[in-house]
Picture 1 (cartoon, rainbow, N blue to C red):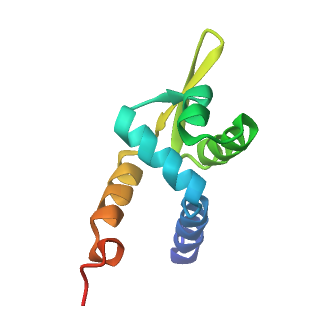
Picture 2: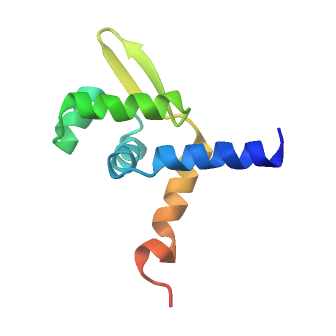
Length: 100
């Protein structure tokens, strides 16, 4: 993979993360390990179709994993590096307003 392809892929993934609803979904999944669409929808108080839309985008980009159990689909953070990235971002002085 060329340097430009790597940069394009990284930008593509960052765009997939950079949405308030997707960020909130990620945080909830990091707190609980896995949730269904219904559980997320109830916790976030959003329409199920909107939550499903964002989950599908995140899963299609490899940010989330999913598994089916009966009639439910459970979602979880698919890549430990993605989880670490979000955790480090939240701890960053740029987010916590602790920078000069």
